Image 1 (tube, rainbow, N blue to C red):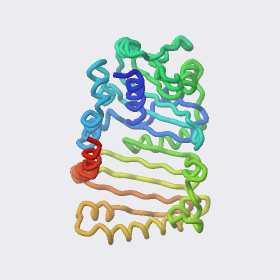
Image 2: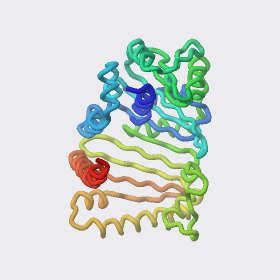
Image 3: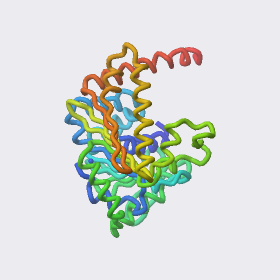
Image 4: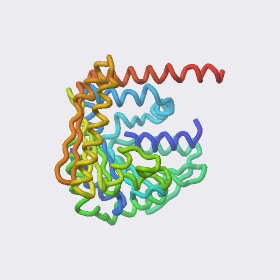
Length: 319
């Protein structure tokens, strides 16, 4: 296996997949983080749907299968909780993933070295870096804590291990609110449209659609999913004014009504659309939806089959 693939697989494992977010992990992320997300992997394992999602990683990711076979390290089993963060800049290519779990550091590092991964000692910690350009890396701070991301962010986390720098109080409150209530969650404390590169979003009246225009007024957003007998999705946006929040809620309701008319004979899709609720209170719009976990799992499996059938002709054409 190529060294680049090993490094990419490790980083993907941590950044693709929290109870309240671990304070130690929060202290490792950059203090100016504007976008954060987390997953309570341990709790996900205890639900049918959560286990289904984790199993898909093994079934459909050949590089992860190689990683597990060669090192014995399995993110689905060994990672308990994960937190990822960025500074929220659309142009920025920086980001950090920090995780708690159980790691055989010696075995993983030895394999990485054999595969040609570059190592750098920084602050007493060994960073495993992408040999191609050394712009990204992974570092095990101890046998239960790992950080991954661009090299500068990884080094910053190593520095903060010795000299913690707290996130702003308002951000911590938001993180605790969502990580306490959800098994997987994400928040942005900056307007979501600011996360999109310039030119990628058109304003209403210049080829944009009503939803896109309404989203221009969103200042902050958050969302999450709670696993269990019912898979419950929750979302929340904060607009600049109460009037714009009411407009956004009306646009979302209109789209839901359109979706209801288009579900046709698909009872699962109809049930999902029907479960969506939208409420506006002041400048805040809240959205939620839910489905039984077995129904949602069946819907995902059907979607995968459908995508596979559409991809099959292209695969045949390349042979």
